[in-house]
Amino acid sequence: MTAKVTLSFADETIEEARRFAKREGLSLSAWMDQAAREKALREVFTAHAAAVGRAGLDLEAAALADAREVGMVNDLFAGPPRAA
Image (cartoon, rainbow, N blue to C red; front, side, top):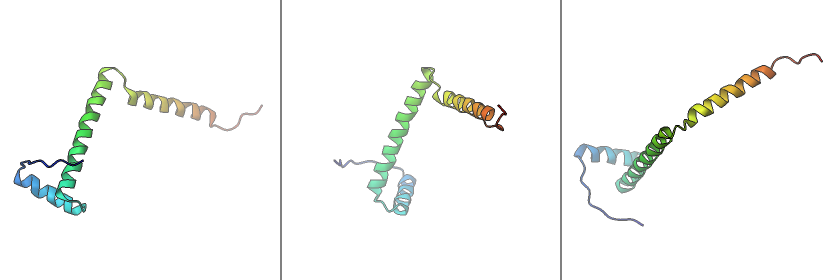
């Protein structure tokens, strides 16, 4: 579904948006719709990341620690074969 709305933008903003829309082969409306959707998704992602951080769930740090641990194990067992 598509809704028609009236919006006001600074002249410079519209000029840049038209230029980017043309470069991407999109109408100005389609480009602005995409830009607004991307901004909304960034806001949601940022809010989610902040909530994860407040909860103390540093998933990136945990993943990096796991990767380091796997690397250490690989280093231990990747050496030359040992004589039995």
